[in-house]
Length: 443
Image (cartoon, rainbow, N blue to C red):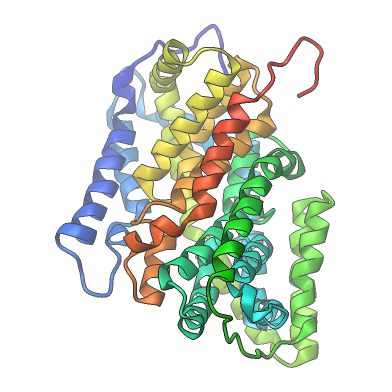
């Protein structure tokens, strides 16, 4: 937020971000493509936490006009922001929810339930719809890809369909759900950093994502009609284990507080697992512990980025970025293109959509306020643009895991990623067709 004592633009203050990008992107490219390591993804050799930790050290070493104690205070203010605190608590609850759902067998039962109702002729578009629903319910694209890609490979084999096409279909559906899910870490990061309700972001987001998904579904249906019917088979499921996901999804769509939604979801999965005999109390507690542990890296990254962002802002780094945006992007639409570009570049560089959002969010919030952009639209742009590129870059976790499970190269999947490509088109259209807000007019 601008004040009379706002720092002057200083491009040198952005050095910590440059250090992070060189370290993380550089080591990732080296160990993924130049000197690959056996059974290890190159972009996971250097932890994102380590890269941001080194970037924070660089930030502390800058600007000797500010004392070490003052820098600590700036970091504490950034970490202690209300939205950051809420975001960290939601990450913990989302992890516990995901853990107990997985331990109970809810993911498999939900997938198998939906697979049993797909006609063989429409196996590919059916996989897309299932990926959309499961990812929306689980809040994770990687989890969805892990569950469904082996099934997609089986469908491709039985129907004589192109394997990269079937895998790309699952990846696209997974990104749809990740983008719109109320319990996705990207949604949590985008909404809480902009101070908006998830339902407000969802309304804006849905108008962009749904047309892209509908066109994708039509394309996949046309392609399916040209091939043979797939032998999907029969999968075992328990309705009682699938119901909690749908109940949570409906509650979230109704705009119920996310803490209440996640709390009820945890209780429902605990009860359904105990009743069905797939879960014991010790296993449930272990599952919740594993789920929250899985969120630790995201939470630490959030804390580190909040600290770095506070220092960069105090040094004038964000003022320099804002000056660049003001110079090259004019008007409300220009501001939105600036936010979209910034988020896209961050995701391409970090190969992590949540990290991209957390890094871009403070600048996006200032641009949003200065250009009169609705916070819900800003949150939507942050989430959508990061998910577009996360679903397209061949070195991202989504494509690397999909490639590993299916035995094809991540690059071969890219031509079949209809949904992320169409989503990019509709993001651009949503900005170009955005109507300028007039005085007293609601956006």
